[in-house]
Length: 277
Image (cartoon, rainbow, N blue to C red):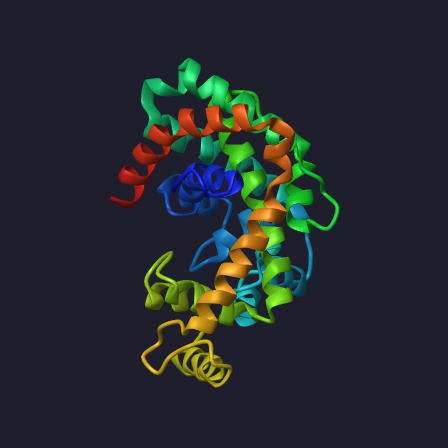
């Protein structure tokens, strides 16, 4: 990150590590299993889509974008046969509380966390719900009260707000869900290609077919790297994503956003090191 990096992206880099661990940490899985949600990615799809209520798999495919429809259909809507969105949401908040208590220790009662939570909440509440279906569903939830859980919730809201805008940018770029996943990996970001493929639910044959289609479009080289055209397309997508994500931070103001970033940088580093090594 440099001073020229858009403020929205710089804020995202310190907020994302606070949101993401809920999907990997045992606190979430244990609580979802207690509700009867067991196996594969069912807890992920249930917990992240719960604010939408009981909806068809197609709605989750649309709002999550880069997951294979067959992967989503393994969880949605059958997961609601054993529990309810309200129960899952309560378990998710409880998991976030337990997770941050473990990761931050005494820091959860610090002025740093309280101030960051207040700033992040102000930014999240300034975001417009129009055209942001997944963000809107999460924004309709009640705010939790302990500052550390409020900080996690605000980070989640701002992440979903950015994600909705990112999907719009991908659609404009003509990149399908799997094409988006593959070009993102090829740009050197995120998880390994194999983990990306398996967690998104694509077979080796499907993945190879999409890569061939990207090569035919001139976006991917024979060895799977981005071509100059592919790199340019990804750069435009990220720039449009930053632009679409800017409003909450513009409302918060540059100085307060910079203060939020400064407060959260050491917290984000600590959480990332503990969760991902």
